[in-house]
Length: 234
Image (tube, rainbow, N blue to C red):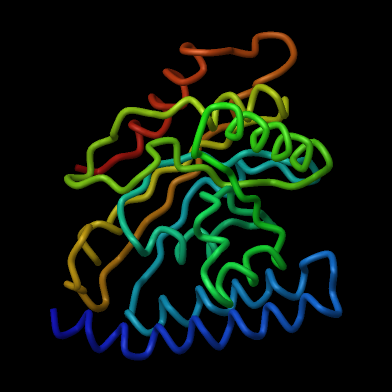
């Protein structure tokens, strides 16, 4: 617990600093490149302060020059830092709208081109997904956690349909990924922190959502789940 408290003592002001930089950078860079670079620097700093070691495989599976949806498991708080560091291209986060209301941090997310999703009711959620699909078709790649929340024991939780509806409407490939070790570094709902641990990320082969052989609905969810499950080290 002490490690976690010490970490937060430094990480919170670091987050505020980079959020402010991202917000200011967005004033002169409307395309979000400056804010995204701030996010990458923030993630690098956060991982270094925890001594996290990264092991990444399968980056050759990520196609260049076309938008994709990265979809994988959610083990802990460090997942966001890790994915920001290891994904080999610019991307946006698909995140609940409430996060964008956080002072500085929410503005920085908007400046970086991250996409809010309103989950308060079905109609608003579908409108949010339509807007997100349009952004993706225009060239933005996004990250989605289909479980919707962090796991308590490392096993996969039931998947929510929103990310798959988005993938079908956008018509872009899904790149499955599997994170291992994040839960051990910082278990859910605790201040515990294991310093110097390893977190691994494995990218799988693209799964098409349009064209010949593309899956839809439950078969698509099942295939993505199987690809993520195949990389779990429990």
